[in-house]
Length: 326
Image 1: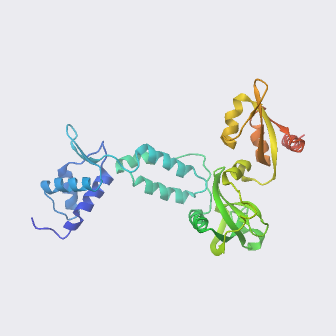
Image 2 (image 1 turned 180 degrees about the vertical axis):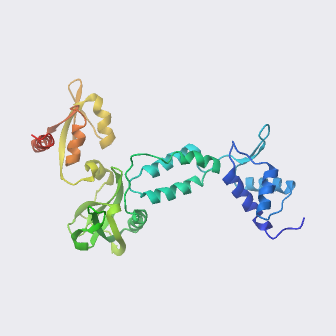
């Protein structure tokens, strides 16, 4: 058979067709494939289709066949199984640090990893109610720049802003550029934060990535390692409740044994509790005192109590009196 002008695209068209249109529940017959190829101006015979399917198998495509009531050919194993795609899509949709537009774009790309029939199931997964999204579309590209700076161990400069009542950006410090050395990224309280060494204040601080603009990766090397030689990103995350600043100190908590899992979930399995009677434990932890820490403690309904130092206990009770209007 003489080759048509589109014959060189035959194998690619066939692979696209199988990946896009087939799965275990939706096979295509050889006749279906011949008709579909014809719509692209590609002529094919049954024997050549069989040869092409075998070629696709040899390059790693899991082309399978089935006989019986619904015979045909389909793609079996894919890079991502359907439950994995559902999980990834829910994570994308529920992530506050991604705008709704960026979430939608990523979800469409994830849907392309499944067949068109499976994608319909994925579309039912994307409607997650009550999720507040950020307004700054540039965060997607900010994260990429920050990873570049982290990998190159370079300092960055940027501007930082808040929103006013009209959703307009208001630059902090009159638009003055911040100069920092990135130490890592943290996803905390459904937001993305950059943890960095601040060149002006000579200490470690954190910044909401979606509130950073005009990020520039400089040629200046990373600073601060002489002041923070043993800095641990995970420990910083554990101590800062809701990523709010405050006075850092070691506090003593006393709790019921049933609350050990809560402590370990928050502060890590390396925390070593000390038995205190038959039903309680005490533990000494480094935390940053903030309303968020006090709120977390209050939410444990008295099953874990702050017992020291006294300055922290007094501050906690003062926060409670303020909250209760006393």
